[in-house]
Length: 67
Image 1 (cartoon, rainbow, N blue to C red):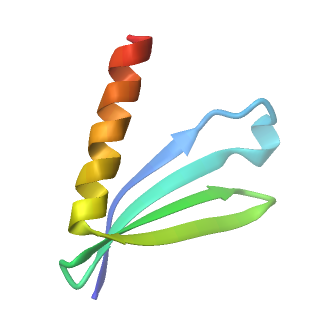
Image 2 (cartoon, helix red, strand yellow):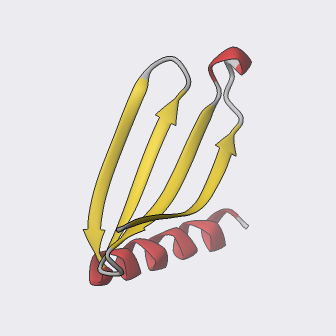
């Protein structure tokens, strides 16, 4: 069963074509990441828990780098 966790609106240079990131889970085993623009289609990937943890760590490193 798919469960939406969080939708994050992304400010873009083209305000009329805003973007979103949607995080979901599926059967409590996979994490879904969907990146979408209002007028431009979606990219959606599904990763297992270990890959999600690796992605989380990479994002945390990137945030520390710019912060």
